Image (cartoon, helix red, strand yellow):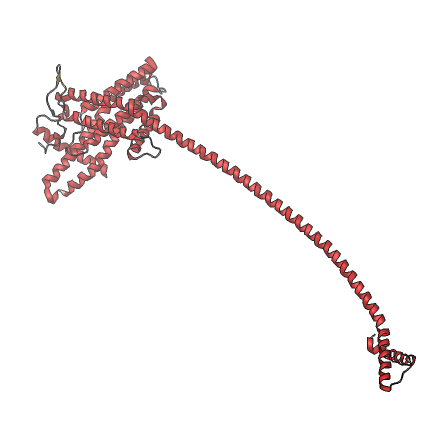
Length: 244
Length: 196
């Protein structure tokens, strides 16, 4: 069981089965790590915002650096109009980042390695951005699919491509995060398995690979959270400032 | 390099996954819909609560902290600027006072020197005059004394010689004959006595 690199993604029930109507909403290991991530985010940012000292302590510095990092990311990509959505993108970035990072601890579960989780987030973003776009621009939002400066002959083709690319946004967004997380964790598990199977003689090579991969995966965990947030900003930018 | 290793290992891991799929009928646990609803429910619950707490309670506080720090730093910079300007102005004032007082001191010194020089000149003139007068008087006296001196000497010589003769000879000698001799002698030796 443990040798199977995919078994780390198994979701299992913790405690009793909870059913609402036909739906099973039991508390699982995935729920546990979602709660752990959100609670640690809330704790860190609560302690980081409690005292307002001119010279911040470490946790305040962490909270304020994250705040300015995300705020700069949003203002750089989506402009000043995106300010009302700052809290959402901040939560999104922090949630994905903490879920990814929690997954880097051995024997933990990576929430974001499940397509359903990332897809729900991406679908929510997609629907939200589309709604914002139609509220801001009405049917003028459809101009997003008609890029300016395109010859009329090519227009039918371009519009189809644009629509497909727009509709594939939630899929690409969710699969990117899910696949990165799953691949990285599977690979680490595989190399971990190699260390055991090759033993004390040949196990050093996969072990050194594992060490390097751990560093790489931490980078990937941060990078994917960043990419997820920045793509959300870019989609939001399309909805807020119709540039086409 | 790392990227190459990364992709190679992904490639290798797929072999492993394939074997795992073959071994276990379940395949990817991600595609097992058993707990999808549960995951969606807990995701919405936890993320929603976190979003609400962050957006309503924590993020405004952080933004407030940042704003207040920014404004305080600006205020401090402004205050520092103002104080520097103040100190610059005071320094200028101080310099002016110093240069002014230096000039004053110079002029006072010059005045005092001139006055002292004048006083010294006046006193010297007075003293010079006094000294001249005294010298003139002294010269006059000396002249008078010098003029009188031969007569007196002659007289003394006559009297002395008459008394001497009287004692030696015991006879009275005519004063006029003695004075004639003395006069004759003194005239003859006047050069020797006075150095004229």
